[in-house]
Image (cartoon, rainbow, N blue to C red; front, side, top):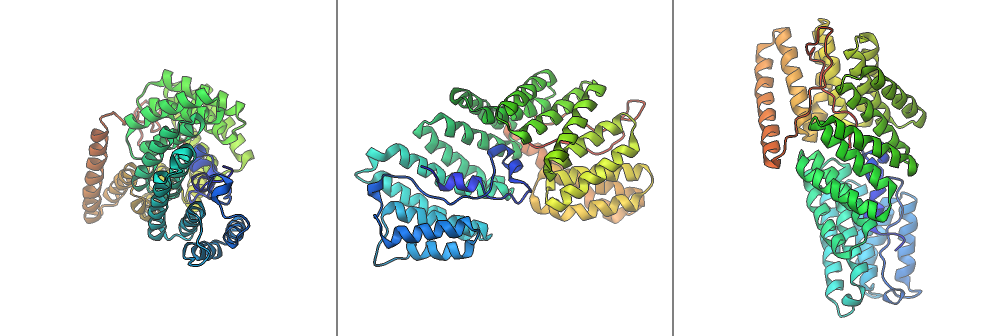
Length: 449
């Protein structure tokens, strides 16, 4: 099957910036037209339906989603030249993909439900037993269409059940390459939901399947995520080992974004081990290559993490310049998680300089997007910074508001981590003053897995 809807939605442009990184992870590129598989005899040869499907594909390739939607729906509603089951499935999924592109999520999910029913009917048909494997892949791709669209919108909670259903179908189909990729996507989704134990479990399974299929890109991604989780657990030797292996396989796969992320994280771990000069070399190299590559997400991560290390080493002015540059990249490109980190770092520096209003301004600019995202750790980060800013300004009423919000967010994070039954707190990565005490210069989560 050359095209399918799940794979196609993998390639939708990410609202988080370059698709390469939200799903760096999950292989993003520009959209290509969805098409279901199946045997040739399952389609109507040289019919108007097939011609109309080809027209729909052309409209999709051209980015004319409203027109593609209209073309797909005309096939779905056809009363005379009734489409065959696979043709109907393709039209349904085209329509769902267009609805997602047009930000009509509710209507898109209804079409996903109809697509799921269509696949179920095909599996239950007399010929279903003879086409079980390709139909199971179609079922997985149907779920992936919704899962990936929700993922790039950062709605991880809603995306997870679609990933899990896709995983169930893919495991039944039994193809290592596709299974490795899907296990990886599922592990990343669990990670963003704060469920480190489930994330690690699926990342290890992904690594096993990717090694079996000899897919260097997926190996690099799984090794990176495992290294990231071990970093969170303060297991720095293990973390460093996995990040170095990720770098090796990223180079074998010519995966430049993953290479840059691994370089940056090796620098982070070396910094946590107080190997600061070596860490600085890795981070400066990562930033240099990121700017050459030109991806805003990579650049902002490298800027922010380099700033943290520079602050730790006493290069305060350089650190502030890098934090400010990172914040502009993040805010402009809608990187909510990283915007919160950069804002908190800058706010604490400004407050330490006595520039409390400047700190308050950048935090208030950041707050709406963070609250809308639902990211608990980032909400807590911004709330605690706002609490401190208002306390320093003597704004008692506002401070009480953010005291309550900070407490609520803190409890939500704690409950989420307890539910996962795995420690997910990371080492305090805030820069330290010359006497070794924490200065409170925000928190960095580094580049995302």
